[in-house]
Each structure stands twice: as structure tokens, then as C-alpha cells.
Image (cartoon, rainbow, N blue to C red; front, side):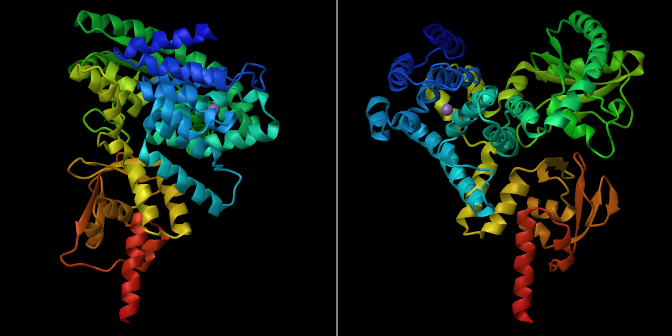
Length: 496
Ligand code: MN
């Protein structure tokens, strides 16, 4: 165990030149004592769990407060330690974090009635909004529990795995920690959908191999060409995760046809600067013909709302097989995988000030990435009734998202099946009051049109304010739009 702890310290020193090791080692000694004599169901001493959780937090390059809180995260719940004791020993921040993690881990988000679910989710959001680091500790905790789920009873496995799939994976995605989202999904998959899991893993094996072989050749060729241009690059293949592969295979337009899945293994090129990204893109397109019609997606000049940045393109690889190529800088890659967690790390490296103070500030910096958390907290403060709130969380925050553009190129993040009316209200409530018609990619479309990612949406405005149509309620999907439309219709009702 001490060996593992030493490894943790080495890991921390590697990314944080100035960590508070006194705090960390004090937390370690405290946690060991508190968990003394306890065993996990796996037979390991209990302390192995907080230690593993903290290793995950260090992989995410978190600050010393988070690290200490990771080591201590179960001491209130499992060892009867009082919060006041933690305040005395470690200060308010650590105590609040551990207390927050304890609070939200008591909340069962699945298997409960709808009202309970809403209430629990509210509580969780309130804790999160106070200090986002709570969520990171909670996610690391869940990740390690998922990795060791085999030791629990079948009933618990199912419940925890389902909750992971429905709440924690989307949460990780919304925080922009893509890698964690995928790992959580893949860990939960066999417990929640055992038969489907078996089917996909068997059928996909030869497919992964075939795609991997194709890409090997491309890797060599591109590496050489980039080298000639003097560009230092890392090229690797990225296998599509099993759960997201299954979701894609299930789509009606794919219907289990592996030929239609072009990104089962994608080629990922990492370079040092943004400029090099575009040079690399040129080299790729010069070497392999880009697939016509499928425009490249440039998420570097237009990042996704959760902060994701990369250039995606599709080319005809060897044997005319379509291959997806993703290009990004090393920094973008880290941010895409670890999101907010690595956000502060790079700002810290840039500022050259390597102190925990800077590290902490990263979390409170105004960032678009956590806007949706604030938004949800706002909604629930507005005394929204439960129905509305549950719709908001389920369909707005945790549902799958699409990304559409305004004619000026601003990106809007909307739930799947959103209509131009939803878009208008997302841009501005006022724009919603002037909807006359809408265009998508330059063509007139009905207002009930279901938008797709990368659509450019233009609202044709009326000269004067118009009242929203009752029919719109049939197809709008965002809470914002529904709320506004209903408000106007209510006013109308009062007048007549
Ligand atoms: Mn735990």
C-alpha cells in the first residue's frame, strides 16, 4: 500500500511543480488510521479504495485540495469522522469537499420515484455548483467502484451500472471529460445490457482488426510526410468504444451494417501548434482523397459548446476504405479527454506560476463549460414545478446534444430533435417573438423541422412581434422554448 502511495506522490510531482505535500501526506496518515481494520468485499483493505480514487484524480492532474479530499472522501460516511474534525485538521476547503461528496453519494438517482429523482438531482446540483471539484471526486469514486463492480451482488451491480449510464456518464460528458464518459459507459454496458454486450463484442472483433490493419499503413505514410515538413507529430489509432459502437449500430440508418461505420477506428494526429494542425490537414488531403460532400468539421475554429476542439475529416484510405482522421494539438487532446480538469493545468503552465492558488482558480474561472450547471440551478430556484424541472434535466442536460450554427457562425448546443423554434429561443427570447419562417443551410424548411448537427440555421424575422403558435408546443423540445410559448399563450388566454 505504501508503495502505491509513493507512486501517487511521484505522479503528483510530475504535473504540479509545487504541490502541498504536507497536506497530502497528512490526509494519507489520517485516512489509513480511520479505515484501519476495514475490508472491501474484494478482500482488499478498505484504504486501497480511496488510494485508487486519488490516483485517478492525479491522472486528471487535480490540485492538492482535491487530492487530499480524494484520500479522505469516505471518512465521514464509513468511519464516523465528524466534519468539524476535518475542518480542524485540514481546513474548510477539504472538509467541505469531503462533506459534499458524502452528501451527494447518499443520493440515489435511480430506482427512485420521479419526484425523488428530481429532488436528489437538485441537491446534487446545488452541491456541485458550490465547488465543482466535488463532482470530480465523485466521478473518480464512481469510476473506481465501476472497475471493481464484480464483487457486489447482482442486484447492486445492475442498479449502480444503470445509474452510471444514465447520470454519471452524461455528467462526465457535460464536463467535457470524454475519456471518462466512455470508460464509464463501457464498464456499465455488460451489466445493464448483457446480451447486447455479448453480441457487439463478438461481432466487432474482426471489424476492429480489419480497420486497424488499414490504418497501420496510413500511419507510416503520414508520419514520413509530416517529418519531411519538419512537423513533430504523434499518430495513433483511436478505437471506437464498445458502448457507443452499439448505440450507433442500433440506429435505423445503420441497422447493424458495419460497412456504414467509418469511424470504428479513427486515425488521430497530434501536433504541437494550431498552425501545424492545418498543415497536417493539407498533407492528409494531399495523400488521401477527401470524401466529397462530407465537409470537414473544424472544431478548432468552432469549438463544441462543451469545449471540444479538433479537426475531423474523412478520406479514402488504402483500398478506398473510408477512414476518419482527427487532428488536434497535444494540449487540445488533453482538454478533450480530461476537460475542465486539465483546463487549469495548461493555464498554469502558460502563466508560469505553479502554485496551488493558480490551480484552484482554474475551477472558479468563468468558463462556458459549466454554464449549464448554473442554468439548472437557476431553473430550480425559479420555483419551477417538478414536472418542468425533470423535463429540463432529463431532456436538456442529460439527453444527447446536437450542435448547430447561426449564419454568423456562432455555435448553439441543443438537445436532439430540436426545431428552429427551439433554436430561436436559445439564441434570444426576443428572437422567439419574431419568428416568421426559417432556413436551414440556405433552404426554407418547416418550423417543425428536426435540426441536425452542423446545420446552419437562420430565422426569418417578422416586422412586428407575433404571438407564438399553439402548434409549436407539439414539436419544441427545450424547456426554454416551451416555457416562453406557454407564457405568451397564458397571457393571451387572460385577455380574451
Ligand atoms: Mn468511495
